[in-house]
Length: 216
Image (cartoon, rainbow, N blue to C red; front, side, top):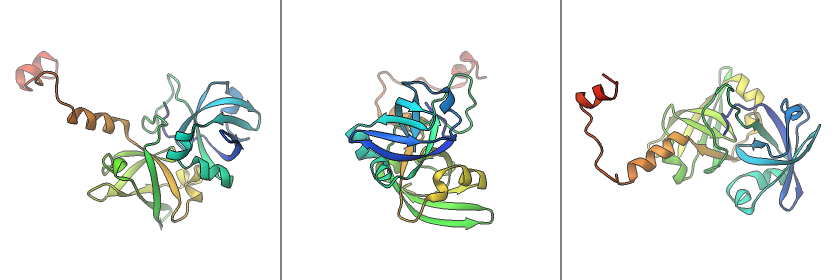
């Protein structure tokens, strides 16, 4: 589990057919890293298999490479966002992010707005269903808030403050670039619960029910 608060930027490269290496000499968590640790790499949860003072190595499945941007970024030696897994007692500065990418979106527009920026993205239909105004979304592992979106949710915008821009790979994005998208976990569960039939009729929510459960 992650929070979408990026702690470092690293360079992603291909190590072998099924392994990637991330160089991140300035990552603050390298000194506390252990084999088996989970690290979100551009929003993708991966497991550390080897590491040293300069970075770490991970394995990736064909499924991961097909459903994310990692293959193309490794081939290009691109920069990626890094976040170690959340620990009990850590601050949750963003929102709960699982590191399981739902789909790939595309950068449609980048516009400076004073000292900040507004980015507009497209989203595939199966991700768009969970995108709502003021809702949370992880873009390349970054916890961000949807500023506004169209009715379907397949086109949405986010506002980016200078700190987030400077500390993440948002600064490197260009028109047409692809990004990893993970929709809000709570929204996905709620959507499923609303679609599933109840095993028994739901309770009637009245004053007596609220009083019995301490709400009134």
